Image 1 (tube, rainbow, N blue to C red):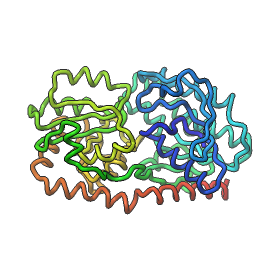
Image 2: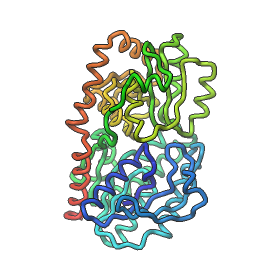
Image 3: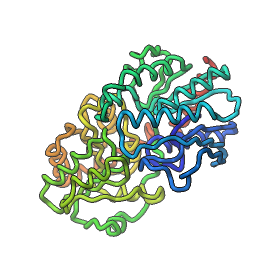
Image 4: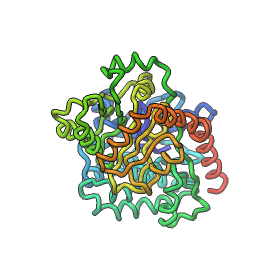
Amino acid sequence: MVSTNYAPEHAGIGPYSTQIAEHLAASGVETHVLAGMPHYPAWRVDEEYRGRWRATELRAGVRVHRRRHTVPPRQTAVRRALYEASFLAHGSLAGPEVRPDVVLSQMPSLAGGVIGARIARRRKVPHAVVVQDLMGAAAAQSGISGGGRVAALAGGIEGRVLRSAAVVGVVHESFVARVAAMGVPESRIRVVPNWTHVNGPTGDRSAVRARLGWAPEDTVVLHSGNMGLKQGLEVLVEAARAAGDPRIRIVLMGDGNQREELRRLSEGLANFAFLPPAEDADFPDILGAADVLAVTQKASVLDMSLPSKLTSYFAAGRPVIASVAAVGGTAQEVERSGAGVVVPPEDPQALLDAVRKLAANPGHARELGERGPAYVEERLSRRAGLARITSLLREALTTG
């Protein structure tokens, strides 16, 4: 497997890459992973790995080969290009000396897809790709500085990697048309949804709220995960400002390159707060202690990304408010689950109105929240998700 993101990263793509590799290893498959140094979502290299050029480690039966790369604290098109180029160069020049039967790439990163394709071509074995985000579309839609200039280049490289793959998995059906438009026959595209990689809450909800300083009468809106450009989290700052009510609390939990800017924008707001990334054992209980779980995206984000946080939100059993484009995969997933409501993106008043409606009707909020775990059981179980990836690899071996 080639995946820039891997454990001990606990958010984004890392947990999925890790669980796939560990599942394969537990099944008796000799499994190697070419990965970067852990850095997400803080966009800082994990302290344990700082100063290391290369590392090889055995984690849960998986041989992980790490290569150093640049990690930009702020995202611009040029910095992202250097991030990709440095992993591409180091991973290509010093890849693991193994002879695989099949190569699986997680995209993004773009570099990981290129490396995976090269290894597969050199070893004359099939290449399977799982598309988590579409890099070309991301460059155009996310609002990253200079993104428009590199969208065509990134999309072109992405298209070549995908066209050469034996089989392509996409995490949502909304990606199929765009991948097909790159020249990949639909007969080679499979929908392989991400699964819920965390368990539901098990702790005492009241005790968790008390520990976090959330009063019983507070309505807590929690956003968990990466604080980047495409999330458009300014909408939550403005919703807190418009609320004018200290009992409506908005909390951002996690890290990311926009955290300090959001902290600056929210100065003086008594009903807006930050929490550090939660420990894995504590994470489900904190999600479950909130009243509403928020997912936000810029209005320009349409079909390039499906937030991995959604699977954890559904498992938490709390209602979801999605401030996202109505035509995108995120809105489709929330509506299909029945576990939340969709409001227009970048509209703080619409988001605030939805929060107030849920707070005023706790029975409806509870009903929405209860649909999340049911949806997880029906569609997003770990067992089903890993089985889909295993099937993808078997198909690549058979047809590639």
